[in-house]
Length: 334
Image (cartoon, rainbow, N blue to C red; front, side):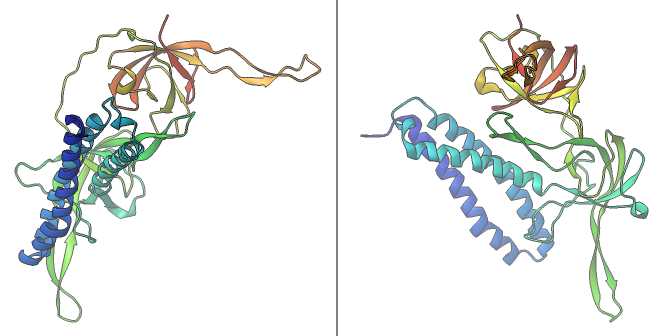
């Protein structure tokens, strides 16, 4: 029996993904290091190619998820289901690798441990191993404004423990003053050696103190968005996964939280959800049998979704009567 069109298109996307990655890894990059005079130039070119490959991989993975998830007898095949798990893992890995080789802060002035607004620091984009990363440059057309993030951490469903995505904590903004460079110097033996001079950055916005190891991501173009607050058209229930912000346990009004429902569950930007405070589980001390009871969930306030992904969404807490914490439930407002 001939496979349906959507399955053949999915296999074509898989072939493009695997073929482009194999050709780049085993043919193109080795030839760059063989034929370009400078290993630094070869490494920089390889970094650009791998950056482009990341988005090709993500695009192919999304197409494969769409095509392989079509309702048919093939979609129930165990091999297809296993392949879909591999696709999701590969897509997440590709995006994580792109973040893992992002430019990072490598040093501070006078050995400072923490950085705040107005401080000067030094950063690098290239890595010595594998020629990964791209050097920070102040050449015309290159980004000069960067957002600073802390290393990505997994966001897990509070009930199932499944990883829904990864979140990098925004800690501030930096401006590139001078790009990375190298200089030739004579060592004590009279031989010429190459010294790496990191890029110079100034911290212009500090949401939290920054430190060595924090990552730099180019500032995206500004976009204006409008939201139409409304209740979801279908019944949606979920839970709060995390409260945005370092060392923050409870969310207050106008703070951002992450919920474990996304576009695949029908959640859209502008949807308003009611927050239910999870009732306590305690012992009935008035009963000689010491019965375990659970208090009913109580409505605690409202939140509005403003950014959605496939498995999770970001929402703004609009109004509450008590603190919002991880595990609190969200339902359609009544």
